[in-house]
Length: 301
Image (cartoon, rainbow, N blue to C red; front, side):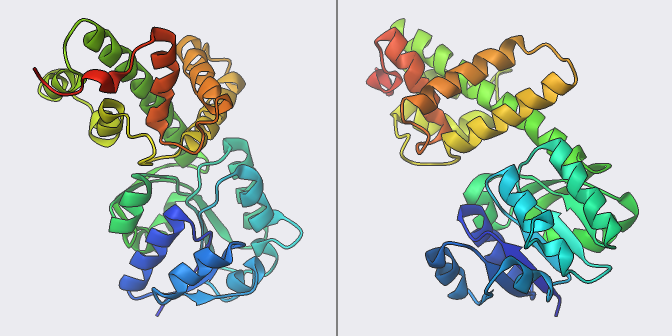
């Protein structure tokens, strides 16, 4: 039985832990939130007292944490995992974090004989719960076969992208497009509703035409129904990913005409206290400016 450690037992981590256990792994866990730990303990996970307590017993250490700073603390910090992990073990960072930080952690881990892979995911809490996440992997290709079976326990699609940091690059490019499509759909739905056509009808035709996209499948119901408390992906988390994308584009001196607008709209939504709502709640910024709600006419005549 392979020992897998997981740091972070929140909305994403819980689903990963469940599916790792179902796949036959012994799973050790740590989270600063005791309620989150209790929740996964009921699934069969074994609580540990600290990050290092998990790390020194694990062959594979998965991280599911909300910020770059927390990932750095958990890996290369004063009480970080790398100091106690066995040579030949693996860190799989499932978080979405800064690309430069990812490469720094990789170098520190390599010095200790620990292999580091950035493995950000797409699919949200529902995908984690059902074990159908898409996993984007960056790291040493020669060692990928050693981590792939563990990743398949939590993901339906596991894609090796390239060298360290490549997984994060793809995830950030992915999420700027997703966040932008949510904004564009909001604008299009408002335009259609104002002109007398229900948003539900517009979405239906889009999904049968060239505008077909998965963003409607994930966020469409919330946009059309105004049910932004039904969180598919937190707006605050999307804003974090947008900021990371903007930093990456800035580092590469890439013009961000559209990215800047998307960033501003999500920042406004966050400043208005919508960070705890679904990503779709960004539409409320446009609704307020338009003095119109998409949900005001969401069913056909």
